[in-house]
Length: 321
Image (cartoon, rainbow, N blue to C red; front, side, top):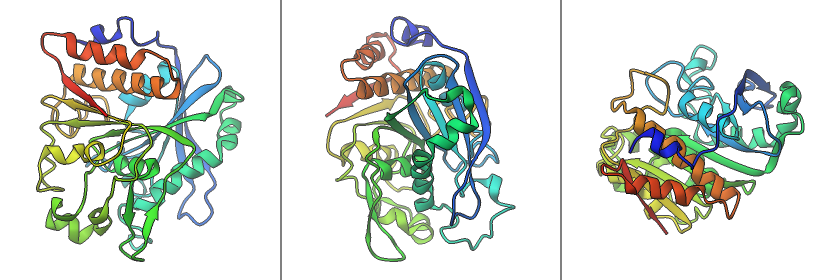
């Protein structure tokens, strides 16, 4: 299945993209203010919003507002406003933050608070990017995240965990978020985790998807073993689909590893399965899913599903419930 096949009659024509960064959002109580990148089409009104949470890869800058250009640029060119924060876990802040800052090193709770603060301060973003003034639709918001960013997104979509420091169940579901895309996201905890993760990142131990009710597309690679994280193998990344209630869809990409073909950046060394057509599939299927969830009656998702399965050598399969 080629990228050109996907683009035929499914995705709307791309618009030029305006991208502005860094936009600083005041964040009292946070170690530093939140810096975000805002990418948007130069035309259009009542634009839906995607909050994009970065992962924790080995590169210095991809895990920040500067990463995930293949996704941010595509979604913006096709009608979304994409807002990318630099979370406190980013390597770009390693010279600024004290390693003993509460929540270090992955800042799982702070990451979700970043997204909520962005939604609280859309007016500040509009003022900082005047070309967006009056063009956002705050009633149509989605969240997407890759790897650790998928964990962040899952909590905003309704997944829960027990705070390992306080021993209390944490519910961080954000009702303003209407849909989600989880890309190579972590699965359940318990005996699915490696000893290293259980010991060093205990918040992963109690991940529970049973209350994650927001419509979500889960994207997983069938060769994403993530042996540093789980003893289960690639199917661990399907847990957000398998263990949550519907409505959900699962896109399983054949031959894909943790980079899903290269979603974190253009031609980056950490992509172990570089595959432009696979990235194109992620771009277009995620776009189509969000269009249909946010605009009931839109046929983009069904058309994209059909395109995925009709070729002689499909890149993946889709399951839904």
